[in-house]
Image 1: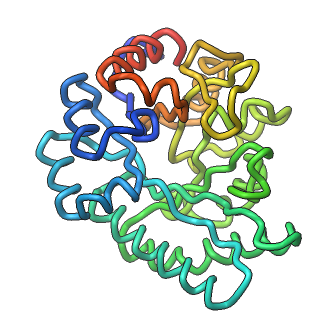
Image 2: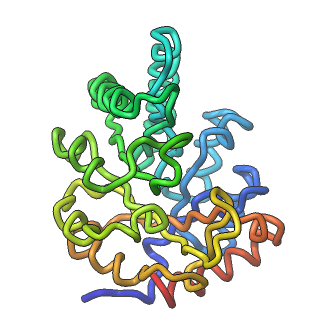
Length: 273
């Protein structure tokens, strides 16, 4: 039986309350009785890994994901190695925090060779899987909207993410589905079904019309045109039962008190997710 009136799977992605540091976000989730949190590595770095882990565990929060790893495309061998080393540190952080997955983003173009950049991403995943396995960490490939292909991710469709993830066991590599990035895809529902047990993360927000800003223009669920509930049902039907992260980049939200934002998040989660 589907249950759309529960907060059991609700996760606050820290991007939604950008001005809060990690301590404030953890305390905010505790006050709002939100059971999950998605952590950003820059927020972890501000107070250190051990203190971050202690804060999360002390209030009983579960970590849905760590953002972010990946970003492999590089213009030199030295840069490639630096990125691989940084991803290894991200894997260690993910293990320490007991997170569901490390979210892997494709990275932009260091030059105009799109095919080579995508090849580098595949090679980066292959390079890291053995290290991630030894730490019990899943790598979650998140395709981004094509408008981000040049500077943020050369992986822009679920089909591309599946092509890579399906080469591995779902305990090692999976796919993170973000409605903001995939809603437009004419093959979306076929791909969700095909992803199946490789779905290891699900993020929600909304697409506003007009879109006020390419990066910081996401909307609160229900304020835009995405069929969020339909996509959630498809993701559930594919077998995913894990946390659902609310990830909203929006300056107007960031300017509001965090506790007020969380109250709206909870209301819209029940209504639209």
